[in-house]
Length: 291
Image 1 (cartoon, helix red, strand yellow):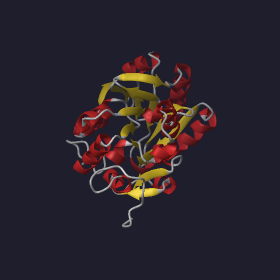
Image 2: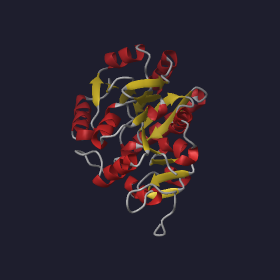
Image 3: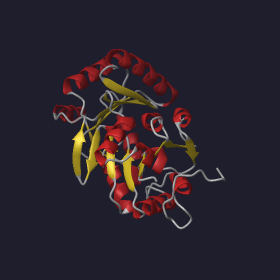
Image 4: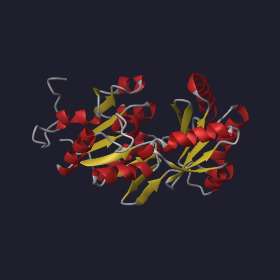
């Protein structure tokens, strides 16, 4: 019997996008029904705690959070444990990237609900455009603090969970991000996890990824791996999707995520057919004939 659903947010629970309501009605109803039937939900995301808190409030349920790709575990309004990047290591990576790559912006996620953003070499027009994009994300929008001084002040606090350098726009930005990933892995691969995310990289401590974080959580909660469903859509979900028997990837997701998953779905709510009967009661995991 499935006891826990571990779901990614962007591109997964938030697919298709609903900028005002966060999730589709079908996804909301499914997770509410699962929770009411005794199931647990954990939100496994690259974000900080701000948007996951919104999800739990919209669902009107208790949901734990593994945030910044597993760099922290947040539950009952408390950080239960976390894995920040060492300050000296952080600054070494920052300086290497700054010297050798045309970074147009930096994002830093820490133990606050405000993302730290630095874009010292970027034109004011680009910054204004980025602010507008964030504003018009509505419910998905992040709070942020802009400025290199504020960015470095956050580093000095010692609670930096994830660093995201942004290399540009479009195909050129993606190519630069891939080249930087190779170079960073060669120098820091024994100390950091470095994942591609389009035109940026997601950098966390070595071994800090969604899959490992979820396994640690299951040990803490005494839940077996075959009692868990995981669902995601992107490269930073691969560590989770590849380690669990009941792994679901979004059909709209990235090719590598789909390749390592055992099942594909259009929406998170499609998982209902695998674990709940027509009356909304829990059942043993089964593959619907229509699939």
